[in-house]
Image (cartoon, rainbow, N blue to C red; front, side, top):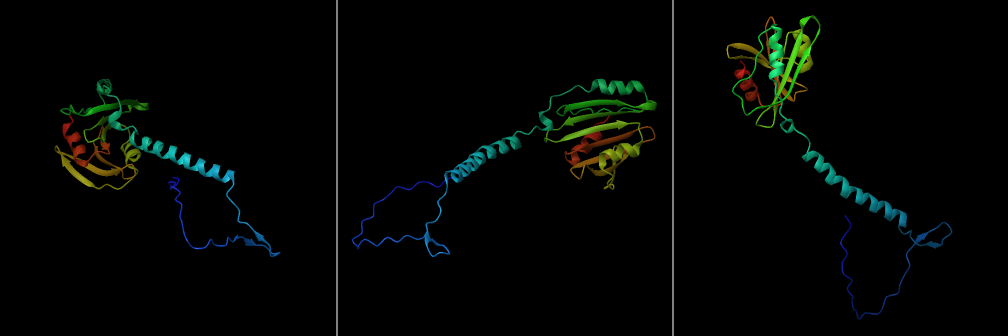
Length: 205
């Protein structure tokens, strides 16, 4: 930012007018060379840098403040995904109940060879986080490693009479609970709090 211009003030002094001396740089020949002055090109570059700074800083702030969140996504109806999975009759398909203030934002049914399939339904929760419910009859090891980055389990918990293994997921930014049964693997994962993940598990019917 350019410095503020100060008003010019005339200073009156009764002392004798001093002798003016020109200060310069000495060359090898012993002559005096006046110091170089900033060129118009230097001033232009400096002014351009200042102008760019004034423009870029607000743009960065706008991008950070208005970056889309999971809660900003439009709601979807996951009923078709759940119904399609139930029609396969491959395993007991669980669906959360009693969480009307949670907004479903994505629902995907992914079939694969051999009657294997995976469903993923994401929910935006009131604390601005998200929780994803994953259910699959695909190989448990492959499914889990794609979510938890092969991290070691944090521990296990008994929730609603079932043993869920807890992990940190996606480079430690999220929590994950995993339930492995003979015909299905169920994963609850997201950046919401651990208590929110437990609430999801308790709501599954």
